[in-house]
Length: 100
Image 1 (tube, rainbow, N blue to C red):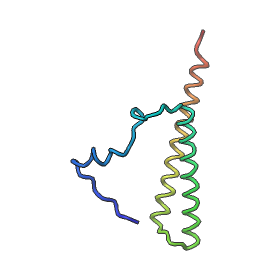
Image 2: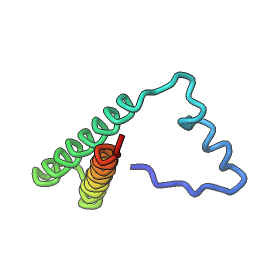
Image 3: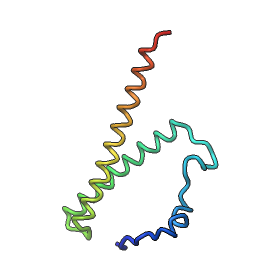
């Protein structure tokens, strides 16, 4: 595992040059595609955490810190998805309560 290299202030624009923001994407992405992608990423994070736990328990070449990191990433993505779901349910309920 490679150590994390510090980012120098002057190199920040160069470091971010490979990252595409949603505003500069070449093709438009629908809300459904974005939501489906986020769910898929959360699911793959959960699967990666489960695999890391299994590897750790089996005594494979994985440290406790790597297992902990995988579990925390999966937990964070799951919590984010739950909050997104809560916001969508709240928005749906608000729309239902609108009087026409």
